[in-house]
Length: 317
Length: 258
Image (cartoon, rainbow over all chains, first blue to last red):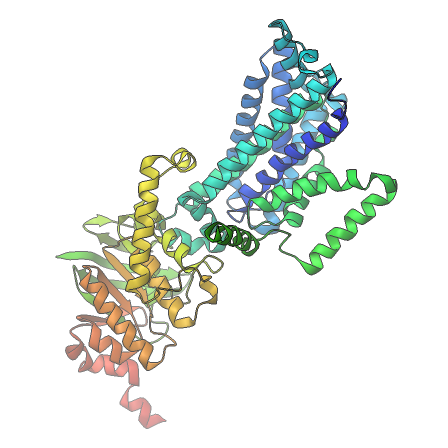
């Protein structure tokens, strides 16, 4: 086989990077209006369970399941976002964290629908389903020089890459439009934003909904990448992990949490050779960040510097 | 032509009557000064006009339509913009971005048009940028566009806030102490700016403590004390009004007691 170096395990780690990029972006979108939501693990589970149940029990195709899951999460985002308007700062963070736990407890106890603490297994896996569909059309993985498990992992990798890339482009463009400016204005001074003609209620609920939608999307993709989900995947550990993407990577630009998602997914893998000690390094790194770069690795001045250098190089050529 | 009219407007905070039974109107194209001692209710009146909170009684009409039930952003859309006494810029944004935000009420691209960058959206953004550059020039901020608003010198921040308010192309501009904390030279610049703004066809309602500025730039004055209107008229007429003199300087008997 010509592609023996293509290791399904590495592809799987890379695939989780894309899921985490989506999750990092999801907390950023809501935070860009100044609302810190820790409910994204909960919205993620709504997307994951909705899509898993629809595809596994009702034979709905994966793309429709994923879209429905994301939409349901988005609708829940509106329902949570409206009362959340009354809360600010740490109170909002605690309330949304509580929301996530409530959702998880519902999933644990609603056994007839969710399988309870055991979760849902044998969820159609997107790579396997793609291969099955292609094989029906007469294609085989061997014809492109890949083993079946390589082909499956590669398909998952490429699909998640596309999903992450499109989502990031979507929100990068949004943030450099009048809507992104409205979000930033609300984060910096809500009263001044309102006086400048910005409907702060609408945009805050919109940002909450978009963050929830993105979490739900990530959750649904997660379900179809791993083919097994349980409430343990969506505990408050997950909520804090998502928060750390933003804290570590930077919360003032979309690319901050994206970087955080990439780096913090890779770090434990890269440090696997020191096994149990790796989380000590992970923790020490976070403490060092808090001291030396509290705004996170990536902040708008850094982006401007990088963009400026590129522009200068372009002009010099 | 009456642009804004207040009829018997009151605002109570608990037992405190911040504004009571105030009526006056602002005519199209004039610069109307609101003056009075600290705590007289001038800024409260601005907050009532922009619906930051609702009046306890009375009615406020802009171009004949009542404003009381509208939210502040809807009032900005109708054409009333304001600045704040304690400058409220978006500090981490650049000066240019601050003005672009001010254009929000005069642009409309939604989520999909913004993400897909449709022809209409790009034309709208180009118009926003064009208008922003005009305002930077007009306010003497050319060259400051890329600086973070929070890092600008104080006088520039005041002017940037006015530029942001003008970006919405308001019919009525509420200026809350634009010359506060400024030296003589900067105050003269503000006077010039207010005249320029009026030249653009924008009606100005001005709160200001600097009497020389008020006397020189205002067409008419409304004087407040203890939440009530105590006088209204041309600067000359108001200056000679004994009640106004008393509000500012105290009564003669008080002087004798002291």
